[in-house]
Length: 104
Image (cartoon, rainbow, N blue to C red; front, side):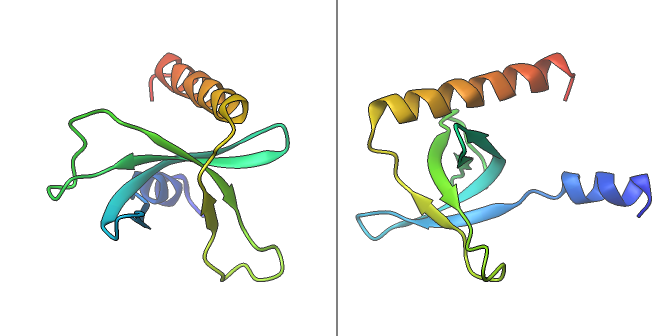
């Protein structure tokens, strides 16, 4: 694969649709998937009807895939433990700092 194809792949924004407890759906851009203490997390940017996020909110969920079936939808879980959430949020902040530092 040429470098241009890799760049094109990363330029395409991946999105997921979350079904909220109240029955509404929210389209979210995937910022990154990262790990903390051998657990995977996903950072999502909720988008409004114009595919924008003016609030600057980022949602972080626990993330897992079924290794037996790579075609199965990944599972996103709400993080209820405050310490676990703080560790994931700190790791995401560090990721964002590194992105900013790298000029991305």
